Length: 245
Image (cartoon, rainbow, N blue to C red; front, side, top):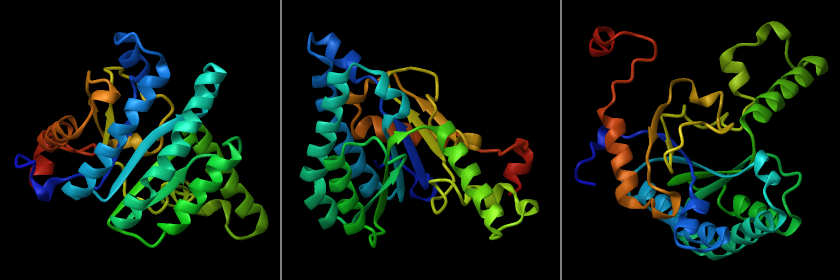
């Protein structure tokens, strides 16, 4: 961590947590064992973000497309999540970490969502670190949802269609009160965004690591942050304009 510049840390980091199945296969284990080990990496990145001082962390935990996996694996994922929420609740409360949900509640097992909703409510007033769990989430679906919400406001007279702008539209996304995404990390070496935060990725830096998610811990997270700090973020400008501020 000594290699990090505290003045150039990203405010919002998102992670596509990929590679649990491959990690398990390499060890001749079933895929669920990979997901179980992956929860240790979730704990590690949350703690690292808190210690380093990153205020917003978004984790892609279950996509809309994940429902297409074998039923036994899907059920195991929800059981793991339920167990994780219960086991981590004391630590999250003690460390004043806020938890939020990005995604569609419909379809999430009732007992899981009840536990999750309770945790969201309990941590709503915290501001040390905000962890957004993307559960039953899809980037395209988020954009469609935002468009539908805006259209409903137009129909009801709360807004005019002429008011639509990028800033207004962003207010209808799950990330409405979250800073712009600075850094996306994807583990396992895959070079795709997998329907994750499609609107928010517009000018985010992307860090791809060959490390499989269950092996991604503090050293790998810090290395991704160091890589981010080496970048020159231009937002469509040229280097000379950026250097002039």
